[in-house]
Amino acid sequence: MKKVLIATEKPFAPAAVEQLKNVLDEAGYQLNLLEKYTDADEFRQAVGDVDALIVRSDKVTRDIIEAAGNLKIVIRAGAGYDNLDLDACSEKGIVAMNTPGQNSNAVAELAFGMMIYHTRNGFDGTSGNELRDKKLGIHAFGNVGKYVAEIAKGFGMILYAYDPFVLKEDIEKHGVKAVESAEELYKACQYVSLNIPANEETIKSIGYQLLSMMPKGATLVNTARKEVINEDELLKIFEERPDFSYLSDVAPDCKDNIDSNYKGRYVFTAKKMGAQTAEANIKAGIAAAKQIVNYFEKDDTTFQVNK
Ligand code: 3PG
Image (tube, rainbow, N blue to C red; front, side, top):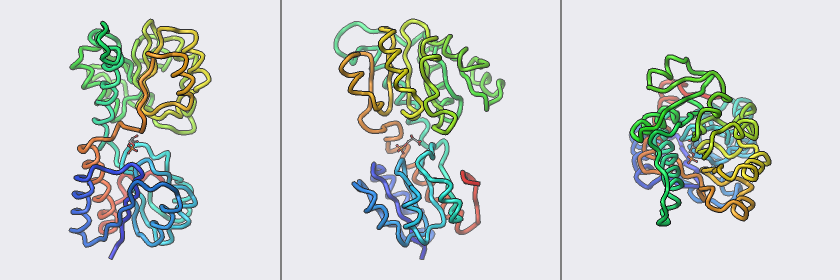
């Protein structure tokens, strides 16, 4: 009997675990659950004899991979797989996958939740602003970017996007103006929604040069990864531009500095919240379970990220 471990420091909604278990039960697989663990030792012990592993942002380090002597497949139930040591997986012949698109709507909705909360001054009773007719730059136009565009249309925003990996016509068919460079995007848009992955090229790539180009009332909305921001340069912008705001899921490392010096100009979540909905958990969880079954039963490697 195949053993599947769900290791989630930040658990899925109970309904997602139940539905995911149904998929595994039908295949005759056993589910082990490790939720809200507090140290890597617990994770290391739980992974010892399992064939498959499902995680969220949990760090699947070389150490974890080495402790998982029987592991054949690891699924990141979500989009960003910067938490998986892909080299360590590949060296052991372990297939690594994500579940792209499954939690994207939840992430996009949170971007607007933060934007509304911020532009209405945290609902403190004072007069705020509206999103209608404001320019929103979508950086980049993947699964989350597309949902951001769809929702933004309902708010009556004017949409721009920059994504060097998506054809101009594939962006423009969504009613979004495709621009040629990140500079052009930041120059045009009061709001920028960051939807880029964290990788060698993007880490610390958003900093002074781009942010200083943004028009008055500049608001950066980061539902991607805090690591893509150059925080020293972010602080410089906060200091130089009293009109600049930063909304981020999750808080940057320099949050105490921002909290002490720039009150009212930020919204930060306490934990990564973008995908924290029952709907997103159910979709990503079921996709993860099905991908495991399809891999073992049909050799299906769709969504493998360590080819
Ligand atoms: C993702 O990459 O899918 C999102 O950041 C969600 O991450 P989470 O599953 O840890 O909430």
